[in-house]
Amino acid sequence: MIIGVLALQGDTREHLHALAELDVIARPVRRPDELDSVDALVIPGGESTAMSKLALEFGMTEPLRKRIAGGMPTYGSCAGMIMLAGTILDGRADQVPFGGIDMTVRRNAFGRQVDSFEGSVDISDIDGGPFSAVFIRAPWVEEVGPDVRVLGRVTAGPAAGRIVAVRQQHLLATAFHPELTGDLRVHRYFVEMAREAGQTTEG
Ligand code: GLN
Image (cartoon, rainbow, N blue to C red; front, side):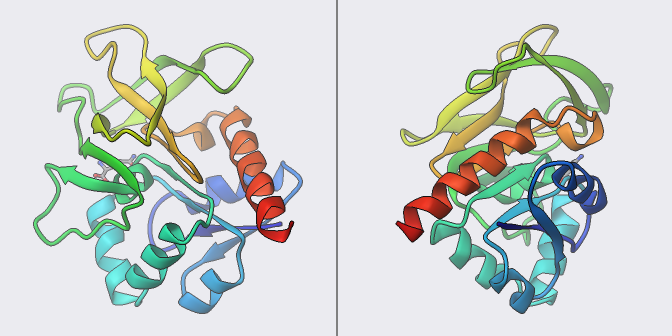
């Protein structure tokens, strides 16, 4: 099982480290031929407008859209969540997401005063108690289509109830950054998703 981490922009290295602790081969993906060689992909946090621009420049937008639509297990955190959205609010006019998840996300949704904060999030598919979730100029999900499962919401504070973790079949997204806290449960959950998808296609 080879899991790629998109390496155009953002905290690629932290995701590679998290995946290296699990029993998979993890490698950076920058070019279409590198994308061809992975079974699953993580899209890191960073800056989604810059990521969108670089993806277009590197000829990655179309190959990514195709693989994602074609069933490649993909996990996006923060900017990665934005890139997996069908619709972006407060994006840049020329920003092109990869799409895949039938949702509307709002960029920088938590407001200027709270650029970064840590909040508690329960993820319904993942045992072991709530996550100490790190949000950095994070998006939230404003609307989801019928095929999207809401996995987690902010539990307290002014943003309580906001959707910050979702899954649509082979696609997973969180508004927070589990790669920064050493809590490997989201990555482990994603690796499981990727393994199950691999078994279905092989079998
Ligand atoms: N605000 C960033 C964006 O719009 C996301 C921030 C992050 O990934 N930590 O892409």
